[in-house]
Image (cartoon, rainbow, N blue to C red; front, side):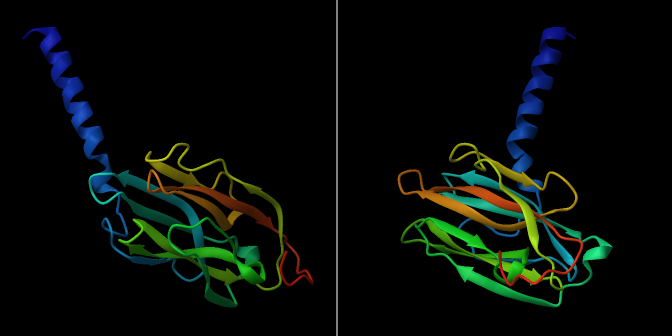
Length: 190
């Protein structure tokens, strides 16, 4: 068999496989569908991935991963749904009461081709965040695939800042990542 044809066939097969990768990611939603994702009790969000499609409603598919918190942090003493954004607007949300993000819910609105967002937050004793930072834009450019993986064990997602492009009908995210103290502290919210 001609080596050039073998190479061409393998390149086409690889390209076809890459273009279908987004179908097997364990998405929590379909395009233009609402979703509610919560980590199991005692676990928090450590990864988020999204795939944008202009042809499927100018929307994203989403998947999330959770991980148990370190033993020293203990179990959450309370969990709640925090503030909600309005579709089509910028939004900054940090879990109140020094909470850690343990879930996400979202509702799609046809009228603005955007979603409302809300974080599920959990409170761990009287621990306080420190060494907080924001990620770079995720995705780096609108309409690209987006992926957050918490870069180091001991950092947790505390919230996010997101902007919406009314022209491109897509969002970019900057996730707020923090470490938590190993001791109890007296502050209600930092």
